[in-house]
Length: 431
Image (cartoon, rainbow, N blue to C red; front, side, top):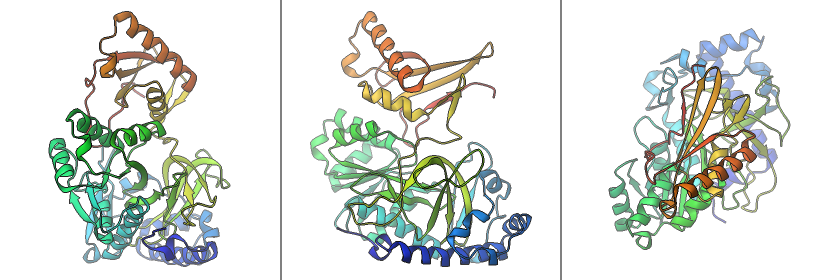
C-alpha cells in the first residue's frame, strides 16, 4: 500500500490526538494574540487560550461563519505580518464580498502535502502525468493539485479549465494518466473525447474530481465513459483549498487530513455537537494554517463522520460523501430539495448529467421545472414518446423528492456546458 506521508496517514489514534491537541493549543494562542476578532469573540464567552488544552475543549470556542470572513475583508483576519505572506487565494464573491485567504510558505507546504496524499491515494506516483484542469489564478483548485503533483514529483500539465480541444490534444500527445478537474467538466471532457473518436487514444487511469457536489451515478457514468477510477476530493478556500479530505481506493468516504484539520458535526439549528455517525453540518478547525486561522468554521456542508477501519490502512477519520449544503438546499413548497438528488434520478433513468433547475414564484406559489437533455438515441422519439418520458421522469422525481416538478425534455447539447463549476440552479424567486 502506498502513502505519501505514512507517519500522518497511518498514525495511531492516540498519537494523532496528541498532535491535534498540541497544534490546537498553538493556533488558538496565535489567533488570540494576533487577530482582534478572535480575541473579542473568545472574550464574549469568557475564554482565554489557557481554557483550550486538548481537542476535547474545542466546543468551548465560538463558531466562525462566512459573513465574519466577508466583514473582515481584506486584512481583518490576517494573523501574520504581510511580509510573511507569500500568496493569497480567493472565493468568487458571487454571493457577497470576496473572501481572501492568506498563506505563509509553511501553510503552502502543508496544503501541498495534503494534495500529494490525495494523488497517491488515487494511485499516483512520480511516474504519472497529472493533468490539472481545475481553474488557476485566485481559485484554489488548480494551484492546490498543481502543488501536490510537484511535491510528489509527477510530471504536471497546468492546463487550467477551458480550451477543450487543446485539453484532449495534450491528453493524447503527452499521455496524461490522472485527470484533476470538476466532475461536471470531467463529464464534458468525456463526452467530447467520445464525440471526437479519441477514446482509445487516451491513457487516463484515474480522476480526482471536486469543487461541486456529484452523485454516485455521475461517478459511474464518468468511469465507464473514460475507463478510469474516479476519486472525490474536498476542500474550501477558507481552509486552504482541495485536500482537506480525499478518497482512497475503498471509496467509503473521504479521509480527513487530521494533522491539519479537526472536524466536528453539529446540529445546524442549535449548534450542538453531534455524536459520530450523526448527519449534520460539518465544522472545521484548521490547526496548521497560521496566516489565516480558521477556528470552528461552519462550512454549511451536510455529511456524516465515521471511524470505521479502512482496508487502505489509513487511520484518518472519514467524512461521507456530501449530502448537500444548508445554503445550496432549495426549499420548494416547504420541501427540501438538493440538486444532487435530481442528478441521481436522471442518471438512474438513463439521461445525461446536463440539466437545469428553474424555480420561480407565481401568485405566491413556487413553480419548479427541471430541463433535461435528450440523449442522442432519444432524439428521434415522437412527441407522444417524449411526453411519456416526461411523465416517467415526473414520477421518478416525485418518488425521490416527495414533490413533482415540471419536466421539460430539450434537444441534445442545448443546455450550456460548463468548463468550471456547473450552474445548475436558476432561482427567480424574490426571497
